[in-house]
Image 1: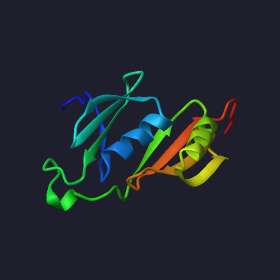
Image 2: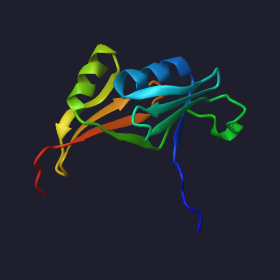
Image 3: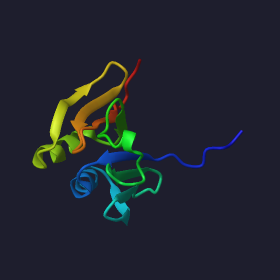
Length: 129
């Protein structure tokens, strides 16, 4: 069996600059590679990666050059309310304000510039099932 060495999500985008700024402003991503067709972001811990690719790039087959649909990205952070405050100042589309869930997470839902749903969660301290 082949061992998985790395997994990265790539989001199709109509505007690489806006998408890059969104993820850098809200999360601890840094630019690892930046071009006119692809941006590679890496978390400061170097453990998470996110690609943003021009949806019309020749790297994407014609039938797949669509904006994100049918999936969402979950990012677990230390304090979801901090992300919420930043999102408000950046006029990010807020789908759902932070709420405590029945499964021990405080959860915020945002829409990224490409239409992807972004689930931001933080564990609730001392939560008991």
